Image (tube, rainbow, N blue to C red; front, side, top):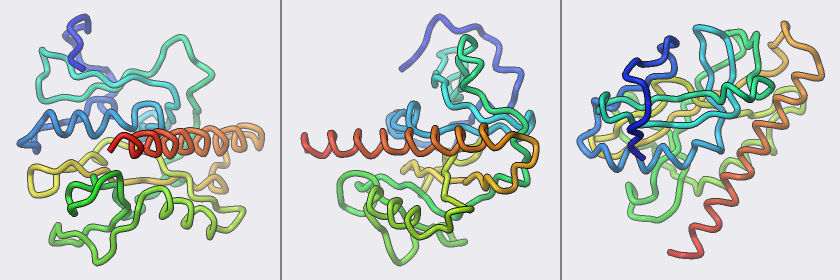
Length: 202
């Protein structure tokens, strides 16, 4: 995971350099976040862009940083004019099953006192249920943003989810809006498939 070829400078966009300072077990956090590299899109509020094609790096010269680098050759994989008013925190978290004595990924909420909510649901079935029950004009489209990777009890990595509300996106065309929805759902489906494959080897 460590990349020795990266430049020593952090990205100009601060939204793309995430801190890992809160984690006692950095390796555990790295393994957890890498599951989402090709399966969840990343939103940058400072430039109002959504990145659907990027790589994650952990440069040795910045030992407590995760750096997200959008593919510079895939300009069409970046969505522009994604207003911050169209991106909302959900209060939902993806947690590792080991946190609750199980395997795989689960959905949960986290209380204000940083304890888990009363119910944890297997990730795929929970996510599909949420998506199925959303109004057609307001689908559930999960994305990541800086600050979503959080530490639970200083050891366990958990991932908070934001979501994009497409009907609020007034600065992009209907075609782009539809394409954005498709890309997010397709990537989420790929995460489901990866989790299914992983469960076969447990």
